Amino acid sequence: MKINLKIFLAGAAAIGLAFALAAAQDGAKTQTRYYYGPVVYSSADGKTKYARTVSLVKRETLPEDGKIIETALQPASRPGGKPEEFTAELSRMDETAVFTVTELGGSFSGTITFTGGAEWAWTKWRYDIKLSDGGSLKGGGRLSAAGIVTKKTFTKPDGRVTLISETLKPISVKRYEALHEKISEGTEAQ
Image 1 (cartoon, rainbow, N blue to C red):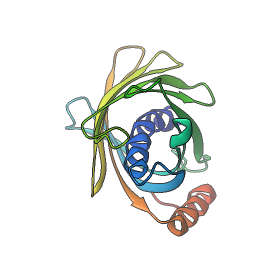
Image 2 (cartoon, rainbow, N blue to C red):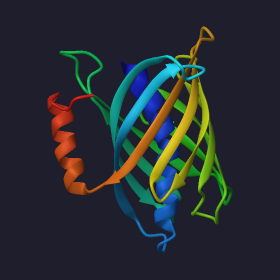
Image 3 (cartoon, one colour):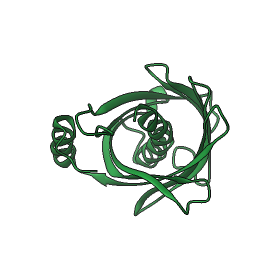
């Protein structure tokens, strides 16, 4: 489902920046990192699971420019469908812990505010994202040695709410390339 990837990418943008910030502790060098993991959609209380998918993320960290470029790929949401890939750009606002995030196709934009940890090494974040269709995405996440965990609420234009939970683990470039090929070909199982 197209909206699911847009929602995921909006959340992943926050995730991406958190990992990039952690990477930037190592001398604020340009880096590319890769992540993969499940995304679960459920009722607002989390008790009823609606859907599950996986997401593959490539994150290019450009600390000297105050930017992160993140590309996310998800398998087709139904048999015979096409996988979907979106790219988001995160830009630091002056010297604050607030970043703007924009999906390059125009499907969402908003802000991410970081807390916890030193500058460029924040470990927690909150975000406020508006989708072009009128929906919104709010939530937060945390970074640890084990990876990233996020919880967010997607509010549809009609007011219905869906909880989205993500768990992404770092992977190697070799694994990323293999998974990208499988998902692009439609052979990666959800």
